[in-house]
Length: 279
Image (cartoon, rainbow, N blue to C red):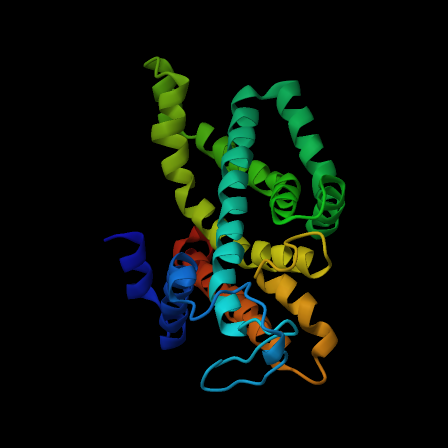
């Protein structure tokens, strides 16, 4: 049984299954958003400025006459793919550092973990804001800023998992047999760390997504006219009292996406975390 089938089978409520369906729908929209968008998301039409939702423009038009639905659909690619880019790079960097630290041990392990502790002393969003401001206001800068601020979480988690695995009897047997390091990591550490890392990834997706949108909202992430959801809210906040749809719909996109991924993360944690399953 695959991980997806296992989760769907063990989902405790229709609400969790609905959230799983929403996650797949959001990912599909992120892939096909530019194709299914009814209008060019950056096309300006001042004659349609701040027009309310209608049959022609289902979610209305923004302050420059751009179609809000098209911008949300196209912006899904920027927001979702940026989120997964951060998670993927952080996973690779953080796990590499954590596993290396555990195998190295001694003063090397101590120095790496102290650096991670110092890094974790700063709130990730505040640290990312500083990096993004230094790198320059752009979506790429926001992505790298979040990578720089998020890696210690995975470094410490992967080190903890690796240290636990290294204490198992089968690792001693592998050492006696002369199993090379890369085989220990590939066949012993990574398979045993998979469940815990999947839980952490699922829980972090919503946090990273909110951080990317937050950085764009305050002006150090994606820049207008890029249809990123956070920048759309920032662009439309001046019209909130007279044209609520400009802000509400991209805000709902962020809310629904973050909530769906968070529900999936909690459900995976319940099913895969041995401490919760044994309680």
